[in-house]
Amino acid sequence: MEFGWNEGQQARYDEVLAATRAAFPSGPGSGHGFYTRKDWLRLGEIGLLGACLPPEAGGQGLGALDTARVVEAVGRGCADTGLVFGAAAHTFACAVPIAEFGSAAVRERLLPELAAGRLIAGNAMTEPDAGSDSSRLGTIARPVDGGLVLNGTKSFVSNGPAADVYVAYATVNPKAGFLGVTGVVVDRNTPGVIVGEPYEKMGMHSCPAGAITFEECFVPDDHVLGGVGQGAAIFQHSMGWERACLFALYVGLLERLVESCVSHASERRQFGRRIGEFQSVSNRIADMKLTLESARLLLYRACWEMDQGKPAVLAIALSKLAVSEGVLAAATDAVRVFGGRGYLREDGIEATLRDAVPSTIFSGTSDIQRQLIAKEIGL
Image (cartoon, rainbow, N blue to C red; front, side, top):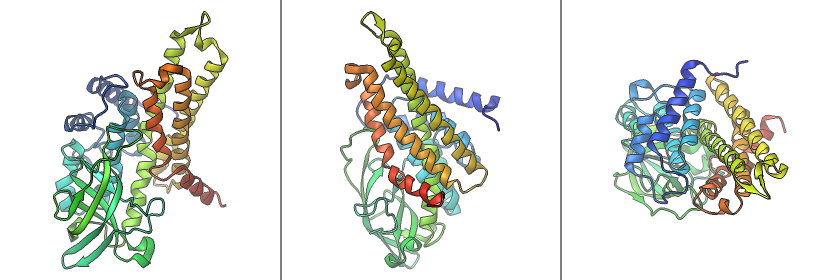
């Protein structure tokens, strides 16, 4: 068993962290608008968008564990969690299924652009009446000569209002449940694609999210992922990458929170003492550190199991649950450590709390992860 990193892995982490801090030097609490194309291209240059994509497509060809370390470094170095989340969703929920299951023509056309950041992708699965139960999709794919015709509405499409291309899921047979779900690649400029306005959200403000509607939208056969009826398996494959690697950004955020709290508790004085000398403060920060290291180890293990070719369902569910619940608890504690300043936008602490809340909802809620864990251990 090895708990260290080789020189190449550590050098990659250090380089990505330094490049991220140089590319996004603005302190926490600054800026409240959506990310820009310039921001996205910077992420491509840093290597985040193509970390796990094949080298022939402009990626680095990294496995899950090394990819997670890249995401962790960017999450630690960039205070704009919404931007990093949008990039990770673009990569794991869109670029990965295209790389694994897309036709040769689609892979050749899209993957280099997605890896470089010249295109933005959005994942269109969730619907107004189909969230955790993704087998009940209302979006219908009607077979026609040469392809499929989509009709339906998707909600909560991260990057949706800004995206150039969508990975969408629809059903060719509503009575077939999971066996009827089909994944497709849809360009934004395809006739019948209607892009909704961005939602007003609690957190991750820089990542636009909105509804996408398909009205008699034709998708050619070579834009079908895998084959008709394989969408559920493809979606679960991408969710494995997302639940493991995407949440590495929250490990990076956790480390940034611990660093901020240690610094603040070492400098802030009350009653003639540094507040870090009070056990009520130091114990809270110690618990944050425990949360960070526990979540990190579970995430690394999940990614390692993926790289070994194991199903990793249990490891991924444990990791996702530990990271999301841990970052929410730690962000709440950070607000308490900072006191009144933690409630102000200037230090960015309140933003981390708002950004942490959705981590327990997207990519499968915490209760869904608990159900997966229970099933995997034989309950």
